[in-house]
Image 1 (cartoon, rainbow over the protein chains, first blue to last red):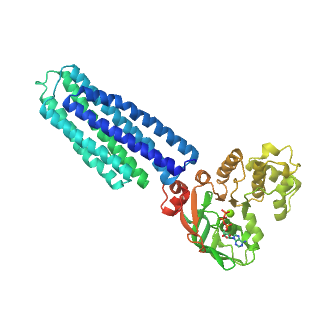
Image 2: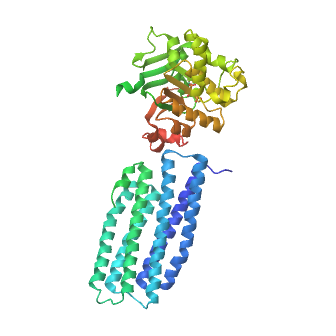
Image 3: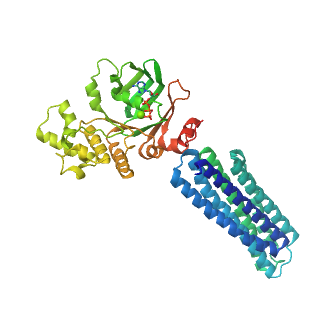
Length: 222
Length: 259
Ligand SMILES: Nc1ncnc2c1ncn2[C@@H]1O[C@H](COP(=O)(O)OP(=O)(O)OP(=O)(O)O)[C@@H](O)[C@H]1O
Ligand SMILES: [Mg+2]
């Protein structure tokens, strides 16, 4: 029998949730690979990205078809429109995890076996915070929880501060770390983590929009 | 602000015999814009718009309660000339209903009824009305041919031309495109968009996307409990109604979920 609009929409929501958990796993693996300098885990993160990309494309296609068939309005329209944008952010988070994994591979190739403990601590903390942000964003989406979505950017300030600290730390240690390549790569990793946080905030905003219909949420500065 | 309002209803209600089918409708309908009336079948959309030109007068035992003012004048007052009112408030129906006469005769019928016209004046009215209804090019060479030989979409545009011929101010349209194919529908929608510059248009439609496309304001009528009269649940800018309605019942209706 032909699936109803709601059955199809529920299917798409399920796909977004699955895609979200794959991307969550990617962030988790990337952070772990980074702090452990685990090349195997980095490779796994890179390979896993293909599946996230596939979800991105198939969800987008399903959204387009559903809109063509039913021309949804009101909440349904806002939800489908928001999903089309949320999956871009999830896909970008997957890509940023891949970028972090590539940092791990480059550093490892250049002979780095373990990072300085104070740098590791900072990156671990950033990693934890952005994973919390991302987790909240996905949970808010899944549970249609605008209140939770509203809280994501609270953490984001801490992430931004941590990133600045990482940068500062590198500069103060510039003499110690002769290896510019290391500094560049590790700075990039922290920058990638910070971007993951931004995408999580954006997902939260989309959730707020589809739940409330209020466009003002996009005008707050992040 | 106030002179933007063409039609004003206050405490409006409608009875068929003892049955009250509509109640408590307060609505300000704006000049030179299109207002869409939506709601489930049987909620009273046709009944509602037919009161604007007193088409319901013909039904025995039907009764209007409350007030309907057009340009500030209560149209149910005794001294209202219904023929004048119907000239001012034209109506287009769901099924095109041309008279079984020539295209030309269909259009001059109304003007002849209202005033004496010369042949030249009538020719002019025919041309202008058909141009306004975007039918002129298709029929200019067969004005003396039968209206019944036109396609459904052409017949509907002829009916619009017939309404325009008497120079109305308000045009009521009751599902004007529901029996037409997509291309004819699009022509009618384009036409509505042009006409709203000079007329006040009220359209009843079951097609949500059509309401969203053609109107600036949308009113949602709903009978909540069987046996009770329908009420105006929400009346707002069309953009708002179709992206973020304020009332849950509107949302449920337009998204196709009920209850
Ligand atoms: N002449 C009549 N006598 C008695 N009841 C009537 C008459 N015409 C309509 N009704 C009743 O009034 C209610 C409103 O009818 P109306 O035709 O206005 O609804 P509608 O919203 O236009 O429906 P639809 O979308 O199906 O055209 C219905 O319950 C209908 O049965
Ligand atoms: Mg009707």
